[in-house]
Length: 399
Image (tube, rainbow, N blue to C red):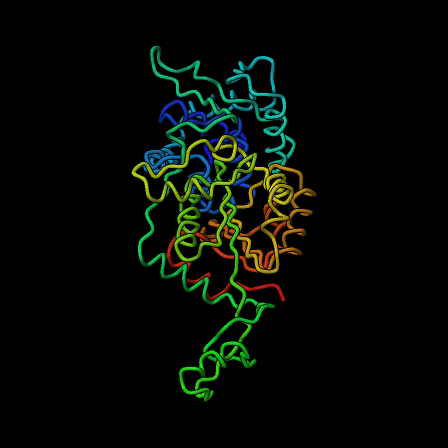
């Protein structure tokens, strides 16, 4: 299946081909995300590898439409001597050989380069992955699609679009809200039936019947209404799935007013008000997300930021926290562990929606997912309406 001898060489050359020949916007960060994605799939399963790379590298519908053809051309149709020559060149790049020309590609920071080097640890000791070349071997005058990701802002083309929520999604969201059985409230309230006689309302009602208490009034302790906190991973690896997670959040907002929504990539942003506005405007896009969309992933750091800034106000025994993420994380594992432990302790439920659960051959073996999963009360997928309906039947509250 692989035209080159080693997986790092194949991954680097494939990303370069996508960038040069198909106009994909791929840089060192995307190369790192692709390496992380391949860490969690069976590398002998062509479909699993294809799906994982498509999820990470195809960030637009046009990219997704062109991806399979590019994948087939690169991995299934290249068997000539040119491949072997390029393989040797790629090996020199990967090993930092002084004879290989290496372009800095937007002068990536030392931290990004170090992160890229970590990505190949899963393949063995093959040396650091260097940034892709800008296309020295391209035909003269050919356009070069250089990746220019900036963590300080999201381009208009990258701003996520909020899909319209139809009645089926709203109905499923209402079912989810209704089926979450939280404990009774501490306060007694007027009710048609109850366990306590209402000594104030009953005499008042009896004035209409000549002081005869023909219609006794009752008090009951109603069920507590759940609050939902939805945290959506907007990193590059979630580009094909984050829109569905935002649609789920929008459906919940239509079913109950007690919803807060956040997005994150390398930082966290509260987008509750923006999501409400986008749901009713013609543009239907979330702008000004800065580094909370379209970059790498530091899940633990962003969840810790949520706890620090919003945990005191939003977390309680009434709160259901929903994290929508593929679990591909390049942050500190201990920070993620501590954040998940705190969320589990302070919320009524901790739901993790992973879109990769629908990928054939997927197992939650990535380090970030392995750390988070023991603290999760419900582990499910998030790829469409069917998943939301299924979630309403399976979500578990903390005992």
